[in-house]
Image 1 (tube, one colour):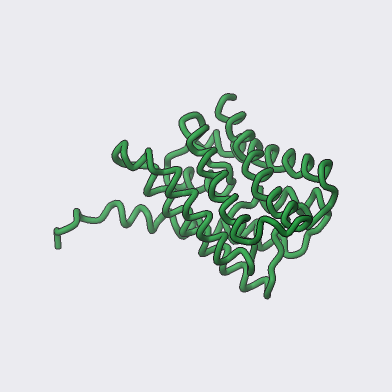
Image 2 (cartoon, helix red, strand yellow):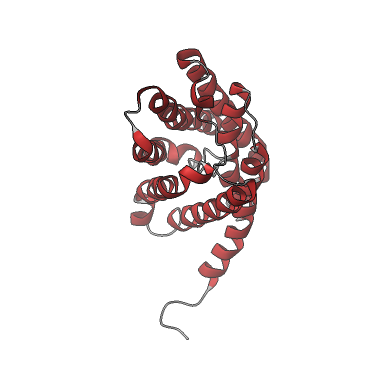
Length: 218
């Protein structure tokens, strides 16, 4: 239960801060796109350091699936993890709606271009994110200590350059909750399916890279 509560709390904080930044920027125009991207990266980094040693700090159903496919999470934990993440995301979206009303669709992810373009972006972005997560969450202790910075950094980076087109969700729970609570379902299928495709591609690539010979061996 400690793990599931950690996933709920971490996902709540992530969605509340990240989507909250979008909502507040829509009202004040004070945060800007750069500020929103930094908010996503910083809140994920903070939650990794706060809760990573409890649950692994997934906060994302796609990441949970990735850890299962890489054999680093038991199958019996997958659905409870995902349920906890969805609960945290929905709670955060509900709180934002109570506080601000249905502003900016509560930060829902909506393609700026075609759905296919956003699908491709979300799949690639999630694949990169999963590849980074798997690599920095294993190995020497020094690498594990830097995991929060690396993962938060890649999320902030991806949100910075891809956010204006696809919303840079990389997270089905993060997209599902504001869509349902705000009642805005435009292209929701993109954000529920593309991250899964990205993870499915990233895990075997990570396995291949990690099973290769040591550098210098030819």
